[in-house]
Structures are given as structure tokens and as C-alpha cells.
Length: 244
Length: 180
Image (cartoon, rainbow over all chains, first blue to last red; front, side, top):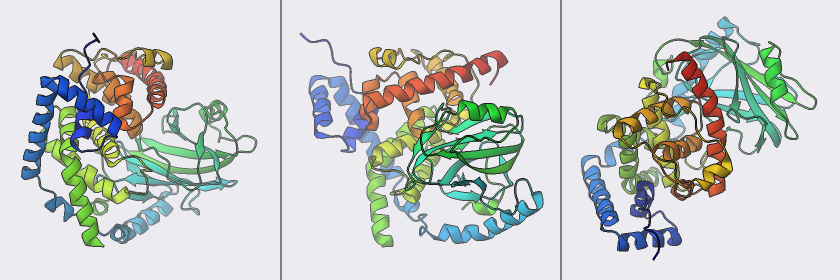
């Protein structure tokens, strides 16, 4: 006699229902269904709920909101220009360079993720708010990359790899880093550095340099920097026109 | 071209939107209006980034992780620290051996744990956050998390151990402050 089988969790039943499982995984669920009336009942409840959901919320209205992919950039153009102009006035960090300051072979750009999942470029010195989600685009050769920050309170954080101790492998064909940082409520000027090296490197010395108020540096490392001004307020872009 | 896109959108929506909605609703304590907002945000975002950011992961796993991330993000704005998840196991081998971390039994303690995890996962990526919610709050085994998200068990164990180490440090700060 084998021990009683653990019922499949909902996530797997959802995948089963969406016909998204491998044949082997599907066979496992089939076996559980054959064995357990409770599992069958759960699956049927999910199936009925799906049908009810689609009656109540058909795809049509949402599909109508799908904009042509490139139009968003046109909508953003005035916003980006206004933000860039504001950055010239605010002058936080090397205003002559609108992406980042660089030392070596790396540049870094920041993008604010909008509520609908789009991205909005953040020029140097842009104003951001607690709760904004920020992503980074790095241009550098294949190698290793880390993104570090020092916020208005002097606290140093490792944004990429998040909380990591060493730089992460970087593929130059994937410049958008796979992490979205939700900004905390610490106000003031936050500086961000992207650091690139041809081989893996430890982040501890760089964190120490930042904590000491210095810029990060090390043998063979290239550094790009940018900054923003964080203000208090509700989550969301400071330019209402950036949202649909 | 637009018709093809709309057709693909409709097809994916019919196939996966109910699961995305249920996922969001479960995490948001049954708030159907918020869950519907999350569902819409997730699908619009998915279609803006599809093929560019998502690699080869299946649409379900991507959408499921996006829904979890967005729902937890909403939860985080009103979350208070309860200390239910004060110390998470951060030894990879132990995580793998312990086939199931006991999930909070009562619905109240599960809500508390979810609030704690929402605070502890601030800044984490979608995949790590989803693994953490499934394992530390919902009581999935590492194997079940791996199967649900199309990951290897080793990847899940490693991600959970690394997350737990970071989370334990954050938890110390919450505990010292005595507030979120």
C-alpha cells in the first residue's frame, strides 16, 4: 500500500485546465483525478468558475485597448522632452549626458514601469516617487554586471542581482535587466551605478566604497551612473499624460 | 496584422484569464474588483512585452507570476508587519529535504503571513516572489513550485534559500522597528 497521494495544488490544476502541462505532468494529474473525488470536484469547480468568468468578462473590451505597439513612444515623446528639459534645470548628475555617466564600456538607462506594464524612460535627475517600479537597460559587452544604489539616507542597496553578493552574468543581447525595483519611501537624491567586468566580481568592496561616500571602482571594472530625485507621494508617474 | 494580434490576445485570454483572475483574487482576499484590475493589467502588459522579455517560458507561468507580483504589490501598500514569518529557513538542502513547510493553518494567520511576505518581497523579481509565496505562505513543496512554474527543483531551492537569507535580514529590521 502506498501512502496517500497529496492532492495536486491549484496551480497545477489550473495548468491542467488550460491544457498547459507536459504529457507526464498531465498523466500525474489524471491519476489523481481517477483516485480522488475531491480532486475531481475541485477541477470541476474551477472549470465552472472559468466559464462564468468569461461570460462576465469577455476578452473583447480589453482587446480593444490593445494599442499598436509603437504608438506609445509617440505619446511619450512630449513627456520625455519635458522631463529632459526639467532634468537640465534640476541638474543632479552630469546634465550634459542624458543617459548616464560612464567610465569604460558600459552605459545604463533607467525606465519607469507604468501601471499597464509599459516603460517610460527616466532621464538623469528625473523625479520619482515611492512605489514607482524601475527597470534598467545596460549596454556593455558580454560579461558580468551589477547595479548598486545609494539613497538619500546613505543606504546602499544591490538592485541587480537583487541583494546579491557577486555580479550576475550579463548577455549583451539581453540589455534589459530581468528585475523591477519598487522604490521605497526614502526621499532625496538617489544615485545608481551599473558596474561591468569581464569576469565575475564580488560586490562587497563596491558596497563599502559606496557606504564611504565614494564612487565604486575596481581593477578591470567599467562604471555607468545615473540618478534621480525621490519625493513623497502616491505611487504613479509624476506626468499624468504618461498614463493611458 | 492587428487582427492576428487581437485573435491571439482573445485566444490567450480565454485560455488563461480565469486562472489569472483567480490567482489575483486569492491573494487579494477575494477582492474581485482589484483582481479584475490585476487581470487586465497583466494581459495588457504581457502583450506589450511578449517575445521581448519573457524568453521561452510558457504563457501560463509568465502570466501567473505577473499576476502574483501585481497582486502582492497591491497588498504591500496596505500590509502591516505581523512577525509571522520572522525566520525563514535559508539552507538550500534543508528546503529541499523538508518537502513541505507547514502552511499557516487558519485563514487569519495565512493573511498575516501574506502581509509579512508582501513586505519581505519588496524589490524581488516576479519569479522569486512567486516561488516565495507558493512555498512560504501557501505550503507548496519545492517540487510543486517547480512543476507549477516550469522550473527545476534545484532552481526553486536555490531561489528560496537566497530569498530567505535576504528576507531574514529585512525581517530583523521590521522586528526592531516594531512596525512596517
